[in-house]
Image 1 (spheres, helix red, strand yellow):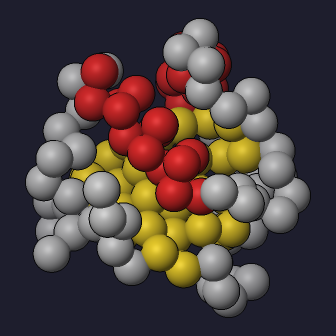
Image 2 (tube, rainbow, N blue to C red):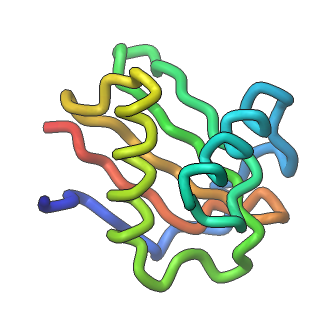
Length: 109
């Protein structure tokens, strides 16, 4: 599987809330039960204004994921098993403890 448009070199201005809401934390807990990365403490799925699926992940990993492709593939499989339609592409943003974006992946056309 080819993961398109992955970038780790993002401006520090790309930030989000430091803590996920309860639903995102609960989804992360479920992700852990499938051998998902224990550093993940929030996962939220939503659609942006153009109808594109946006997956937001909060992690305790300060420097992000060394093997980001493996992380993204496992997360995609988990979300698909939860009924999330990832086959038409999605945007994945991973944020650290301070709310700074660590990774961005866009699999849309």
